[in-house]
Image (tube, rainbow, N blue to C red; front, side):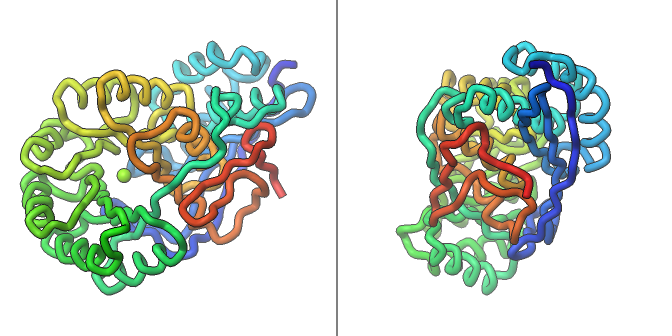
Length: 356
Ligand SMILES: [Mg+2]
């Protein structure tokens, strides 16, 4: 039953609240949905988030890549021959990780549906739930405190604060949230490249002196500055997680060889899908590096695939899978659902997601 068609559509969904980081601000989720059909009409679905500042791919670029080079490599192929097919997909679009990720996830979903098993089972596990943190956008101290309290009331117990917008007020904002949520809540930071190495060490040092109890800090410095990341890690006690610095194996090897991070944030849209993401998790594990699975601002397809990966392969810290929680309605039905801080995956074929 070969693949006969690759179709693209756009997921456009409003957010419950604006999402603000040191890199960007947004009020909607926009992503490219990719549907791959075999001759029997069975379909698989994948999603490519539009995060041009991270992956360099606009919505237009994603669509051109999927409908052009990736479609040509996939149509006519046997979906059950999954691994060789995915390697060809990777070779065909080396500079388009999010486009590759959408096709990789759609092919996994299709292959799992053809076998009648859930994506986690297809990936080699049976666990159908994973915990998630919740992200609180960069904002003023008062609004951060209110938002963090709301999320704790919603049942979340790991709060990720977006910092890096201003090193002077970052410290007081983190301390305000820590005081408001209490010791039972885990607080982690994501600076999204917003600090210089010197600023990072100063901010983290002040937080350490104040016993802020920060679990880890994601990507304190510019993505390309691996030496800066290593410099921060040697001087700060707070564990450092590489995010934008690591897309694939090549960057992870550099981070490991320079001792630049304590852990890595593995995301499908950076890695290029589930198959390369598994390789990243295995490499991290082999070197004693911690690993998290995260997502971009994306919908239930991308987050469902990332949650399946986390459920099967495990992470050393609570994953970052709240993105789909923020959607205020969606044109898709089925798939993952949130219950407090837990992501539940359906035990239905593939991702269990259909268009309405
Ligand atoms: Mg991050």
